[in-house]
Length: 213
Image 1 (cartoon, rainbow, N blue to C red):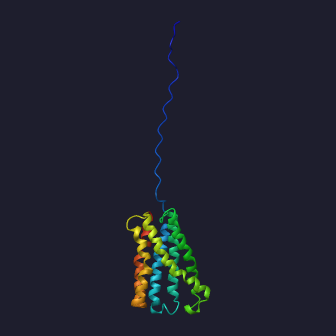
Image 2 (image 1 turned 90 degrees about the vertical axis):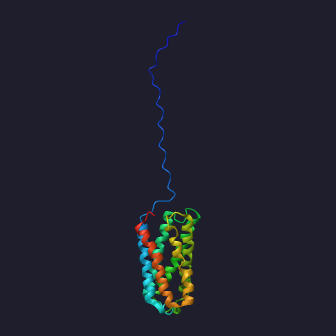
Image 3 (image 1 turned 45 degrees about the vertical axis):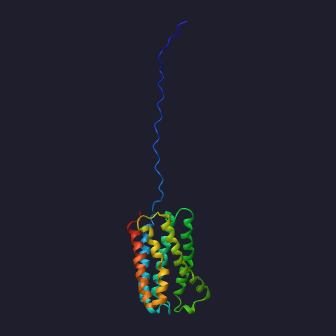
């Protein structure tokens, strides 16, 4: 028996093309559209509170100065904007670090309530009890900024010196209390104003100019 081999008319199936490698995921979410406005709000708030502090001068502990209170409100709103940016960009970390800006927002809300309520009173002694209670959240919110700044530095998601900028700015409370107790209210007002502009003010400008940093 003879066997005849004929060429096959079937062509071999082409080898599948190698799939393109997927792009590596970015460790840092892209900055949102609110980064630049938040930087502007923070810078404006820091300057406004600094100016209001100087205007109030040695009367700060005796009366509630309208300009100082208004500047404080603008600064608080700037901090709220900053906390929202930290959350949306994961600047304090994507897990437990997110708790720090959330806690800061919780403290800022009653602090803002006090600032709004204080406009109707000329002297702290005339404040009702409920307003005195929420007044505690004002210094607590400034203390909380230290933990937020430390979380930003630890997460290492902000580049260069920007990583440490917020932590340095947040030391306002620790630096100003000794100055006020030792040097007095007048040196404190100028020291506080200078610190606000030199730290929070410049941080806001850096965020506004380079939101991708």
